[in-house]
Length: 58
Image 1 (cartoon, one colour):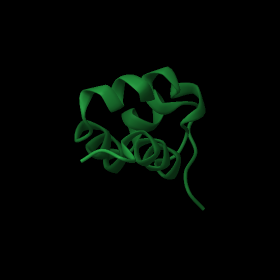
Image 2 (cartoon, rainbow, N blue to C red; image 1 turned 180 degrees about the horizontal axis):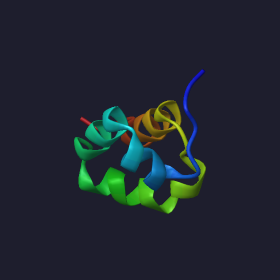
Image 3 (cartoon, rainbow, N blue to C red; image 1 turned 90 degrees about the vertical axis):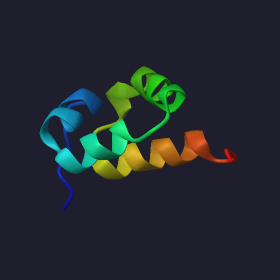
């Protein structure tokens, strides 16, 4: 089962894969994710949020 954290900041502090993924995102995506940090508590929720925010880019 996937590890869950209290929020995105704890996730990034303790999960190297999540931190690396987040660091590679565009700044505007990181800014929007910071607004939703309380609801992002796992790597899959981090990835899902980023994919929703970047859908249609490019």
